[in-house]
Image 1 (cartoon, one colour):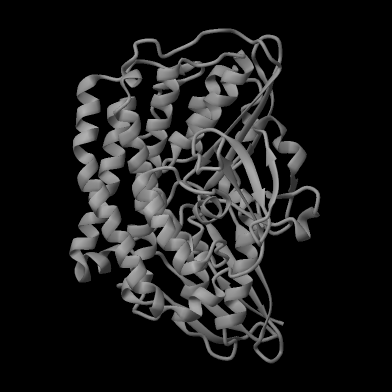
Image 2: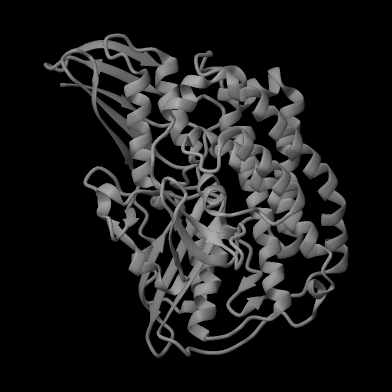
Length: 471
């Protein structure tokens, strides 16, 4: 048995490696996706006051701290048994939409665009954001400008771009300032124009990659995501809808009942948990979350620009889209949704209401908060004692929900592209690219300049190096 090891997987947030096991004929017999870092947040939160949980858990990630803040404060709201003021709910959703825009922009323009624009078989020294700047400077500027818009909206609302303390149990810390509202509104036309250009670009690229479309996690699974009362796309609040591979509705699950629907497995090869649809078990209960899954689950987006883009997406690809290659396309449609929704919220006079926080103590022994983070469904679940100290915490992050699907996608790509008798850079980049399609958030580190060391060795059964690629 011979093994190819890709370590590290590049242009993702965090640290991972992939092991590809080959048989005696050089064919792929097995693949393993390893998340190689250990984060102990669930354990070291025990004993802390529940009101500190938003600030603590936001430090899980420097790219999407807003997502953890919102899931955490929703869990804290439930412990306090309060209904937050309407203005606070709208402001939280506005903040969340800005987070979706900036995070999706990072994923598409900076982490994945080098593969589409420069080619999976291109020189890895140039296949990065610097290569995009050199060859497609207008696109690179668009990516920077769109992410800047989202981050500046977050800073205007919450006072800080990263780990803001504005989102608090019971609501938000302060009302929206009118000048902040005007600044965000003023930036929306440019942001929407950039997003529309990106959608057109991706549509123009699809036909160049038929083999990747076919092999990039193109498999039947279940899908899950929050939906609103009429089945619309919902990012801040709603029930979790599960559909099967054909789009048939399996269940709508209230956030408080998530544990009845979702089981969690531990894998011997990874520090990342593996959630699954409990009724089917880990082998058959694989589901996907995130942009692709949300568009499969929702009946419609509910905003004009996004719904128009969604109609074209479905006309091209069908009602249920299986290939993970199209996570990127779905991500761009969600940017349009986020911008549309921001405009709608900013037009609501209630957004400027002065009452933005409800206060209370411990009125329930546990609380559950669920939102749709950029990468998918995010769950925070806390139990507390009578003094409000956390006795137990469970966090199911979006990448965890996708863990089993990522592993199967890696295996599918490896079997489609890897020739174990001779290593080629492009076939190994495709394996990493299918991981990037999910935009995994294993920690907050990203590696977009192409300078990370990569050492891939092909060994014979005795351990002798037969072939090697370094960069």
